[in-house]
Length: 114
Length: 113
Image 1 (tube, rainbow over the protein chains, first blue to last red):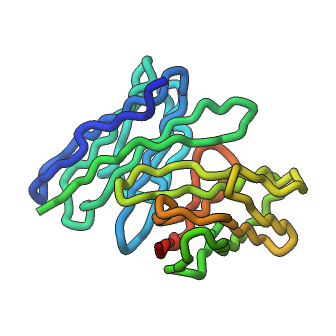
Image 2: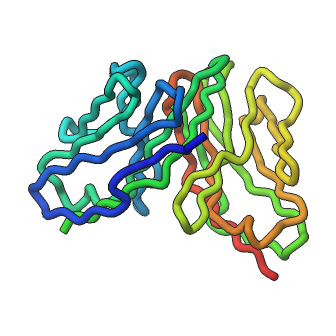
């Protein structure tokens, strides 16, 4: 079974622009979570989507948004990019079988804002 | 809010030896899950081991085992017979509801040949 895939793997954007990242979960997984990883703040939860609905949200400004499609693929969008948004963005999917909440991660998208 | 603390930013172990990585957490919940993830230089997060809080028995996965002390809110990872491929960042993570992992700051493990 194919793992979680994320596209693109690397991205360079200019301050003020917007960006969209994509995540395809493991087949059959309906939950997709997004995390931001930076050297200063570590790994932080952004939001989670389940059956096309945002179920949980972390403490990030409204510039960070996301959505999930009927095939469980998810996108996250960051508008008006700031230098501090440079990070590795990780997507994780979960089957939620018996509520074990095991999450399986993709390889990440490295975003650089200049 | 839950917090996860990894007090060892870096650890070093000789190949074939045993090493223990520490993790403590703070929560008021009684039911939750704890995880150890490995992040090698490729940046791909890999699930190493999982522990359910309601289970008293410590989880084991091949060379990896945990020491779960619920009352002390401690969750350490023991790696036996360390291999060069074990070198990576290790993250302790907590989850009690939904898919919102709270991560510790990580421990960089170096394995010496």
